[in-house]
Length: 268
Image (cartoon, rainbow, N blue to C red):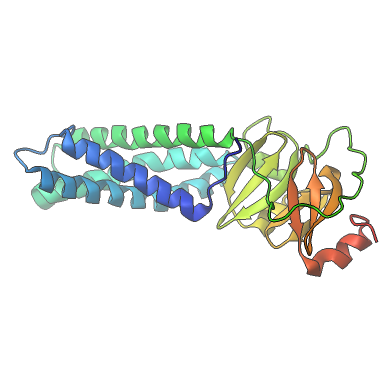
């Protein structure tokens, strides 16, 4: 079974749902004691607290990713860099609720910060595992609206399809395979390789600019393809699609057809 990739908005909703579910479990079983407080009060406290901490993490992660890229590290290090700052924000918030300014700057700050760091690190590890598993799922074809009318004979596949070396590879984990295509998903770009993909927070134009000049072209407002990965073309109703190594298909904008014909990507 082929898994459908989540869009950026769906990823945010999924993360919020996981955070809320954990907050409910913590409240129901009183895993983080807060004294003699009713279940309803615990549910309100932990749902509001966990979701607020998650929102703080989203903001801190943006800064962490920028720092990681500046240092030449993969984006997931940026998420890790955000953990201590999220713990710091949670610590100040909790202490402000229970004791005001005196508690925020009192002797118990260190102990509460350690607890907040452990919770933040636990969430980081959970989402790291969830997204790592999701990235192993096969990539679904981009367009399946209609059966092809008359597929053109595929061009001979190159020995190593895709772009094996690029500036974009520096944003990915070591050993990432040759890149076949880039697909925009809201504020993210999915980097597609043979049997593997990765999601990076950047515009499609920025990701395409990191690919070697002349190695590919943008064929649609949401798609960039490596020329060596294109194996043929087909019609799906009135729409034109380019076939990629591995059987994937990408849509072609009508406005880009003349340019692609001039580049020799499309048959006359």
